[in-house]
Length: 306
Image (cartoon, rainbow, N blue to C red; front, side, top):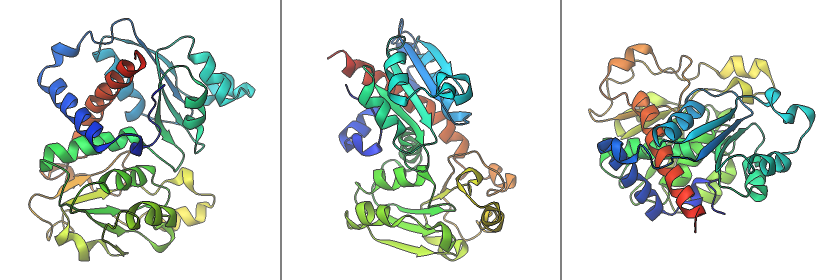
């Protein structure tokens, strides 16, 4: 049974296929409005979510399917101690495909190993968030026309940021990529990501604590939130939470075609004044996420028939 746990589960050819499908959905929505008629998506969200859960649900409804939803761990049998494996086996009796978010790294992998239907990782702790990466990739494609020869600045919480880890894994497979890693020393990209992804693929990268100094070289600026829920120590969170705040002044030296991205939710790391800048693409990302999740649901359900 084919599931999506890590963005690297998809080849670049399959990502290109999903992008083409998503673009066709944008251009011809009526063609897809009944593609999942009679199918059910179970959204199992054991961690808070707005965009990801609602976009999965909107995606399935717009494909003509239906949704069964668990919106918190406290509203499921997990609160009684049910294992992830048993939950996956149970939900497989009711639905055709599962989207799961869980605070524990690896939980969707366990679910996929035990489910008899496809499982999509909708975020597992600080590890991976492959469908956010699909949203990011469609945004990059639509704004830049492709994935090659880009300098990508990743700014903020690069240690716990699962969206950052997944995007690095995806973009490392394309030609002419350079990463600029911008973070406090305490929130640097984990060494395993650098070793197993960036260095293994021979991708040039620089690390800095200073956003302004590298702004002129960036084609993409991917801002992230310093995540309170990933910290064990409130004092550390309060000290680091305002490390980077993007405002219009900091954008004065940026390229005119810079693509500003953010997986959201935003707290204060991007000034609301930046929303009016034509280079701001983070709300486009939200919409692109729905289209890519539609394409992914179609792909996994089709493969499940084989």
